[in-house]
Image (tube, rainbow, N blue to C red; front, side, top):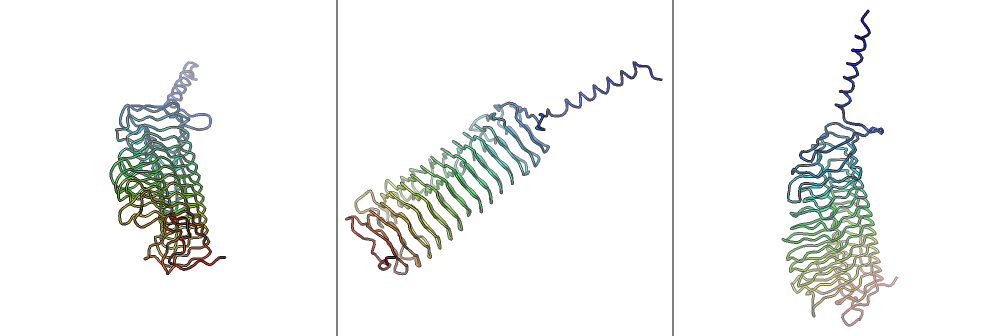
Length: 419
């Protein structure tokens, strides 16, 4: 029989060992979330799958990521706190990954990191974040990402970046993207093939220096719907500025594009620029301006076999004096476009006799054939309402255009047939 004091000593040793084991493990909330407390001097790396919750904000004093995720199937709830980087001039991301997927990040703010605010892999989900003042993309994610209810503003310092970039078959919903300026190319949202962008607001994106592009939305085949794009601009030479830019086989529907402006020579301002086999329906495009001798102002530019139906395009203005200068509410750029039941109003030139090629409600160059122009309404376009080649089909259009207010829409292509 062992003495009582010996048994008590064994119990005490076991208790001490248990306490040490619990202290060595991360603290865990009652709902199973693991408490996450960040080190401002070094990156916190998550190596184990699970659900984590931030217990406090952090301001990094070193130019390193606040969090690196090194395991798949990780959820991070920022719990309303802010991750603040060491400075806009640095090179660190706010949160990044090492070749993992299926990450969830939600509910907080990421700001002032020198590179991307957030970089995640495939099958990630991002929601309820404010991402602002970072040097690269606000959010950068691989394929099949879902991003919703986020505010992305004031990101991108070096050009080529912008608000959100995702790869194929991703979804972006109910996000606000604002003032993601750049010293070069800039994009509010850039999405890969098969992406869906819906119910977003994209505003105040500007190319501040250098040639190149400024796009509000750029999607390589997919759907853009119920989204408003406004104030995309550049005052530089040789810049293409587009509200919504698409690849082939894209649907753009029920969107608003307002105020797309260029101010340099050989530049183009385009409300919606769509690729081949696209459907552009039910959109409103307004205030497309090419000032200060810029080349081109176009409301909707459609490539081969595109369908352009039920859109309203008005106030497309060009001051261009180069040989290719034009103002057009709708421009059929490729063969086989179908243009039906659109309202095209006030394509005009700032200068007498300009733009050089003219101002049109609906226009197709002489090299473009098999365009159907049916039941459209054109009004107050300076040169004519409809200008297409004789190899195009026209029927049932109502045109009241021309500098003198006449019906200059009856131009090559044959007389309309009233339905």
